[in-house]
Image (cartoon, rainbow, N blue to C red; front, side, top):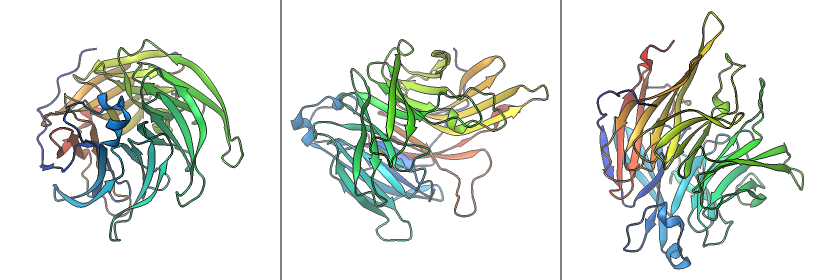
Amino acid sequence: MNLKPGPEMIKSLATLILDLPPSCIEFSPLHPDYLVVGTYYLDQHDTQNIADNSKGSQKTLQQRSGSLILCRIRDDEITVVQTLTHSSAILHLAFSPHDPSVLAVAGSRGDVAFYGLDVPSEPLLKRLSSHDTFPQSTLVLYCAWHPDHAKILGVTLSTGKLHILELVDDDYRHLKILLDGATDHELEAWVVEFASTSKGVEPHRNTVLSGGDDAVLRLATFNKIDIDAENGFDSLTLPPIRKLHTAGVTAIVSLAGSRDDETPDADPALIFTGSYDDNIRVISLSTRRVLAQASLGGGVWRLKTVSDVCRRGVDGSHRRRIVVLASCMHAGVRVVEMIESSRGWEISVLARFEEHKSMNYGSDFQPANKMGKDQRQPGQYLCASTSFYDRLLCLWRFIDDANGFS
């Protein structure tokens, strides 16, 4: 599918050079004036990137280090307010949707850590716990909170495996492996996402998906989740989905979680994916087919949903418009529009941000302020993005006019 021409290239509002190479970034959902950057430093002379360095010797792994950098956004300026050294390099971080003051961190020495962000306190960012869950030769590449169960996470590893973890108590001090190897890729497992393959008004998030460097989507379905039971998961590994991607699968976002109540007949078994093959795809898990795809000009490392709006026509038909922030490695950032109608799905690029001179591994947008008055103008999104080797953090604004969507 050919991309529609986008508007003029977006320019930065502010930039900042960080102390270490940034690998991931996320705004605080509780305090949207703050964002956290995870860093990844390889203390050696070669110039491999994060993907290359997931395959390393024990000696190489011992030379990795990282940090969490807390930044404040005020008057379109970026200020570093705190830097915490981490015991390993950081591959990914994710705030909890259940307790948005807590974030999980995936580390390069088989570790999973938890931090708390408390803005009125000093220091603001505090380590709650750190767990050497896997061997030090293993990288934890990605972590995802279960959307319905506050104590359950999925993590993917450089060994290719996906594991389901459980927090045993409320203070994050005890973490156990609930399900060992829910899926298993032949190469690195880059991403995990909890999704649904059920139709109905209340679909169950009982399916976990993983994407790997083997260009395969793997799925496992849980028939029940009872974290109080000794064997809380009754799992079934489903046949993998092959041949839809021509390179590693690096991003998965479930559309079921953001489905609008106005469209109860919509298929909840939809995902969109990013891949090293430069493409973003809309995929139906029901039919195991690609419904639409488009090249974004660079490897699609991460995807983040900005908005998801549904409209129902007088004839009963519906249209759905999703805006996505895509981190496209050497190509920079893309703001992507995906529209579903009776004609199917259409994908186009709304905006580009290309001031990064090296790999763009992380991008995020400022969420609405749920604690006080939201200062954002309708359709305006403040975005932050990073690039790896030049250690650049950029702040920029995207204005979405919805292109007359109705």
